Image (cartoon, rainbow, N blue to C red):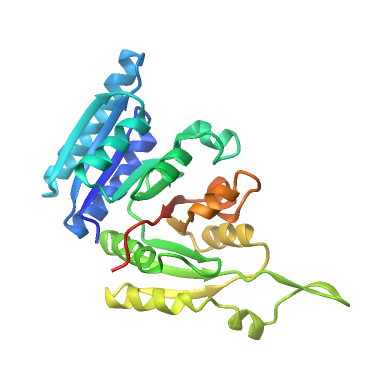
Length: 280
């Protein structure tokens, strides 16, 4: 599916850790891997040293795993450097880590993360590392919030990650509550919760079964973001994978959304995927 994967690295350790998800995915895809550090003009020697050292470590790991890899260190703004590489080398998936400043304000407002997701023509996987020592997930939680766009790519992305790390997948849906005219807000009955399961979940399951990925389906209740974070904590998930849409990213400028809330409150590592591969 993915032929060329790019992992953006900077001077912070979380970006190096996030890039290891890209290594795992490139290994099972047989994809070419590019590791890039964009040195912002005026960076200190310490920043340059840390960024270059991270790229070198990842490059050596990639070669040791038999990957077709290259390392790129360039001066320039990260977005401009990454966009150029995406266009000139036909990258179709970019991995990048959240930065500390992203979580100190409304996540999607005026951040490199949002620029990468909205201004790159390829798929983007944005990673938040919460537990650096749990980069080999054994339990992946995939929340469903309703109808999904680019379902095939989302499903295969999760299946390939699970295959790369030998992980089990839990598909989770929390339908929330209903507002009754006479009784006010009420929780759904078990029958109503089962009936609310998105049909897309069956198609997702078919993709997992095609790659023989162990999986289960679970239903929650209550406010969506809270239900997801509680499920991840109680079930001791190592990784949450949620999808984003361009429409959702744009609307989040005016109001928050569940993806942003879960990213902030996640008890484990988190990947937000914006899929852009052309449908087969």
